[in-house]
Image 1 (cartoon, rainbow over the protein chains, first blue to last red):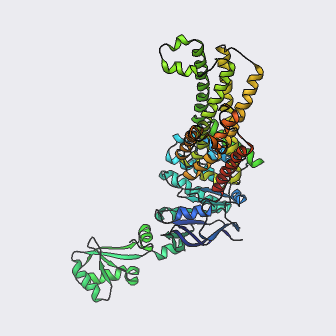
Image 2: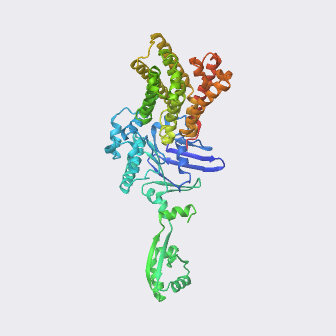
Image 3: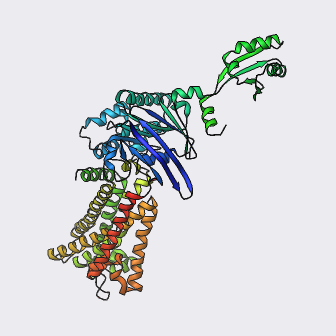
Length: 303
Length: 262
């Protein structure tokens, strides 16, 4: 059994509104699947269906080959999760909140709470009430609850929310180590492609409830648009020179010339020669790679 | 059983660490003390001075003996129970939504039915504690202010009526729990608990003949303090109360099991 998480035609309708529309995806052991979408794209609804919190209108989800539904609660022995902002019982301390999860997950080892607090660097706040934690530490507490029982599957909804840059790096390293060293399948949602592409092995882009693209992280590089940006003292003349040679020339907002031809991108020196010979030497020649967020917006049709 | 024990432990911790727990216990103790004070004023009318309202209140205390005081305590639990127990139930179920922590309980290796049962177990324990607080504080204050006419048999009989009335009131908390779940908070269930108390009084005054069939009036009929003019609770009355209780429980459990937890 290779697929740890599998959905097939997963759909959720709220009245006439389709929050999630026929999402089919798979996540394998040791894979970090980045689930990317704007706010309201259907990420959290999908995650709640994966966790049996919402019943699909049609389609199904399986974890470890077992169907997900509210009655199949033995399934959750192997799954850790964090959904949206990780609220905890506000009047209970960090330790008490973790102790509740330890008991409800039937973990006999008392030390597991200390270990997970150490791992997530919240041991110093163990007696602090959850309501007095900073957003970043509340997020760490949520992650501690998710990983305390060493799950085989981790389903995380925007786990980097509220964390400072150092915290984001720590969480990234933690998830990377869980996936690579222990073979944990990680399903992680985010709305920031730049962040998630740093450690995800595969990406799924969801927009208006539909999975619009699925790709490996290596494919992402090849799919990102590249262009050659040129500037001269007379861009109108330069545009004419390059146009005569058969290049497709566009002017971009700040007046620069943009060439998308593969030949121009591969050999900017040829463009330089042409412009110098035409009496219009370039003051700028730069191969520009499409920003990850621009790529994401292009895929969902917002750019 | 292991699941239930773990879940009851977790619910117990949440209750023990809450302000609501302390507030309700102190409030019930305070009300018992106030009843004792009222008895004290009944024995010392000069303390009421020219307060007509206070004089009127003390006049309902009958002979001012232990029998009157114990009847008063039963009246108090019948009036305070639906509100107090309703608030406790609203808090135990509603706080999971108000504090947005319900999702932490939904994907654990514990069935949702177990979680619902453990919540009702903890509500029962809490309600029994409040009941005992009211009764024992009442006894303590009664002894302290030297109410005349102590009879151990009478106290024991009153205690049984008192505790049974409480249990009947507790059984009617399941619809409150259901409303806390579907409204995902406190307001609707607490409003409902207050409404049932108001309706019970309306029914007692305006439609006394339907009291045996109105679930929320049945604890009062059982206690016998409503007087001989009113109809008595019958077997059908207890059957109706139990049906309402079971319906509330099934509704709550079904909601946890089948409703979308958004």
